[in-house]
Image (cartoon, rainbow, N blue to C red; front, side, top):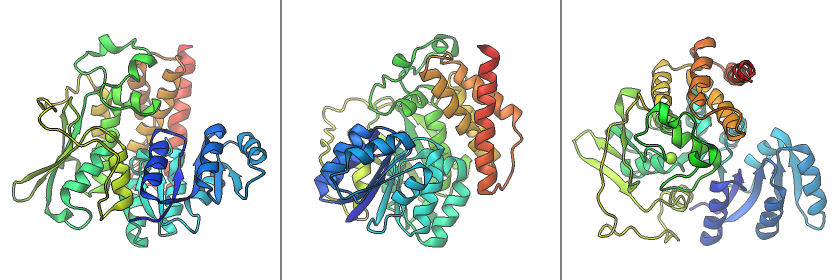
Length: 385
Ligand code: MG
């Protein structure tokens, strides 16, 4: 089990739950980092007494430095601060729970420092999966998934050792709050409607991604990199009850699944205790009361974001990065009520149409593609408003 961790994105949904798991397991927290929520960072700093706190925004960092002046703690800012938190010497594991492509460089820095990565940031693998996985292999850094689906796949295979026995991944998804609705029916849905997920309580960005099913698309690409499988070996199943968190078909025909109540505390804990298991604070799953489970094929007409993601998975290169960055920018505009729900897909599709895809990109080319995608979404929005 990990003894000492650093949490990037400690004030978000996964970050807060990681704090609770660390407390439950008696794990020391040596560094915490977040974008700007210094009120919660201060509370966390006083509770966990980390050596280092990183705040992405400079002004917020200054204010926190003042607020914590009575404590022996270093407060850093910017990407440098995030990287310092990702490489803090005492930590044997870094939980990467920041939202968006901002997680990429700090994750690479943690890999270079030989830390275990408890990976909760999807964009890292979506944008730079080839580079990140190759680097982890080279440095001998373990990447343990925190996302519930990938944790389920990881647990079903039996950890890192048996990947050559894996035939196919069965990636499940609830279908989100708008399951079954057509594009016309969802076009003008509001942020409040989009973030009310039936089974999971999550941050705003991932909740919107869940409503468009872009989340499943990002997970599709993430699974491809994590488990080294081609896109044709991943099947998406809509499973509205979220009891099976994903499954694998092994080469002998056995299908192995992981089942649990929908509670992120469990995959977070497993990423920290692997290869051990410890008693958790999650409720046990009662199959007698769990009810029926059913499975459907996703309707790619109704969920065009999922279709785009599957196309990008096949295309490779910077395609997924452009898609993910355009999506991040479009979801931001949607949450600010500047574009309708249905325009998220249109922004991402237009960014993919207008930006040339580079195969085998360097890290710099990936970051540049990410920036171009965001610029394109801004330009599309400018045309409308
Ligand atoms: Mg998930």
